[in-house]
Amino acid sequence: MKVIEGDSTHKNLVTDEVVDMADLKKKSIRGGMLTMASQSASIGIQLISTVVLARILSPEDYGVMAMVMAVTAFAGLFRDLGLSSAAIQKKDLTKAQQSNLFWLNVAMGLILTIIVASLSPLVVWFYGKPDLLWVTVTLSASFLIGSLGTQHGARLVRNMQFGRKAVATIIGALVTLVTSVLLALYEFSYWSLVWGNLAGALATTVLLFIMSPFRPGWYTRGAGIKSMLGFGANVTAFDLVNYFHRNLDKVLIGKFLGSEMLGLYSRAYQLLMLPITAIRNPINAVAFPAMSRLKEQPEDYKKYYRKITHLMALGSMPLTAFLFISAAPLIELTLGKEWSGVTPIFSLLAITGFIQPVAGLRGNVLLSCGHGQRYLLWGIFNAVCVCVGFLIGIRWGVIGIATSYAIVNYITLYPSLLFAFKNTPLSPRDFFGPILVPVFASIVAALVSQFLSTRGGVHELKPFAQLSLIGFVFATLYLITSAIFASGRASIMQLYRVLVQLKQRQA
Image 1 (cartoon, rainbow, N blue to C red):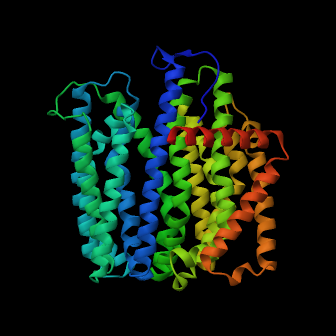
Image 2: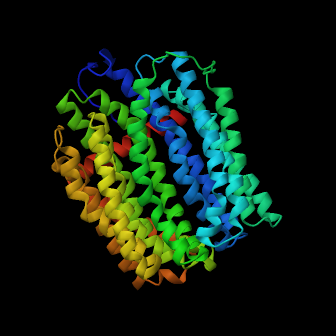
Image 3: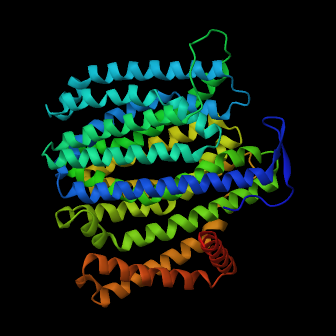
């Protein structure tokens, strides 16, 4: 990733230190590469898990897990309390301060474990499924397990030791996969997913303990963590309101349409998010700290935002457009023919996924410019809009839910940009300009590829052959359409140079 060009150093007015921009660029690139490698490995593991387990377990098994995960996801908002972010951003973090944060995280993890386990009868009552009682109790232990490694992971990120954190994440995912598959083969049904989840969480926490340089001391008074608690409260408040529109769809489907429909919907959502997350997370991981350091240099800030937005669009938009037109063979290849009901849901969610990664960068803008309160207000407004859309869409089943999600995201896009960019160096033009070519090229490539595939008998081929042929045609059309524009040609040449450099390094 290319970071801001210009002077090698700028003054960081947040920490009142001089920031070496060359060093920041080097660390950003290395961190982004390691995070992307970790995401790619995790996606590969999850895809293997999806392909294997979908042929052993039923949609109802996934539905049972999804019902409980909707509950635990809400409780999980309070486990971290935003303290990992506080530890990462604190200028002069002492061992006593981080030790206190560690014990606060552990205390909250224990409290949440007790509360969620106690609420398991209410989960059974709400969904009307007695099987959920012990599933909820068992999964509640994940809060305590995860809280033990929170500050260890934060220290690794603070030190930019992304490689060590990646190892812990990848091995944890492997443990989850192996445990779930083995138990599924022994006909443990949904319990294979439950125990796989806990085993992976435990493995990740143990590895974070081993690899992190942080060693907690005892809790001490007067360590000076009040400001960090305030910072964490803002982050937690946003996460709280954001939770509702991220999970209300699953709650409504589980309540009114049943576990089987929820299983179809959750599989579509998770499968779509795998590649999108692989692109979005590495970019966000390095964008936020860099933008925070550049907020007092308006021109540099604007240039960086435009570049990072263009990079996000280049990665996510053609990908989601391709997923939209190739949903049927992709679902058959990864999940099997018995999961064909996922296809229309997957396609509709891909429409939302087309714009969501680039639009999500507005959160980085608000936080990096210090607009924490406005960040929370936007979260509340967005959650209300999406929840209203879900409540209306549920009348038409899962298709109505997926459709309403897309409509709300596009209707609120421009107003959200006006709100997020107020009192910043940016305007909506700085958002739409960088994504113009990827939007146009992706839509053209998708439409032409879809037309050619329907007329050329592609659907009669095996799923893998369909994906290969459609992918080749789509990529060719995308590159040709992009090359019409000067910025598109520049992006293609930059990608070519990166590939050449990677090849030279391998040699």
